[in-house]
Image 1 (spheres, rainbow, N blue to C red):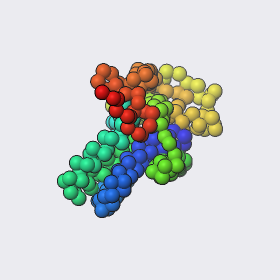
Image 2: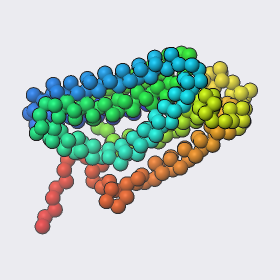
Image 3: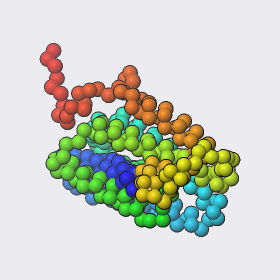
Image 4: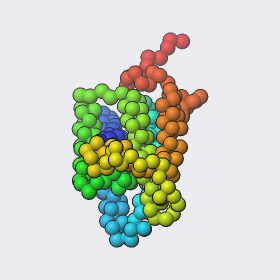
Length: 290
């Protein structure tokens, strides 16, 4: 449940911050007339993301077991790829997200209503589709027949909306760079479990061999139906009897990805390096005297 809460919080907060920045900028520049197209684009993005999630869930129920496992495994790998790209991108751009969105909004204002709808839709829609896909893959991997994974996601999204509202009202100051670094690191750990489970699905679909070749089996020490076994599965997608392929994939993804992600500058270097003053506040620095 915690891993799904983290997904809902992390992904939901990104979308909430985008919405807050767009709306606050329009209000501050006295362009309230542009709020309706922005909300229209946001509503369309949310509807498409929800529709995409429903299509994944209900569409897969009509398939054979083998087809379900093949679909689940394939989409798990795609979801991990998207989330990995997203956490690195957000860590690099979090400090100047506001100015980037302001620039896009200025260009959209010059083009008219359709551009405003498209700007809001693209800004929120990408987050929504990524969230729907990764949540589906994570719930599929960690589901134990209870609604707890979905409850965790819902609580995470609700927390994200609340934090976004507090951020907009000025009641909460968030160091975005640090927040997305810490939550991104935890999300990489969650993604490693989803990836390993995705390969297990592909093994069950007979796409990859080695389903009976177990790396170890500690089911006696950590029974899957025990409270701590359920907790480990819910948080880390842990299973006490993984295959050799699962362990290999888990290590090959987690170790290098987390190491690179936690480097002081991430992927940013040279001209791409984030300047330190951008993280200290929202006020522009005072120009130096010539």
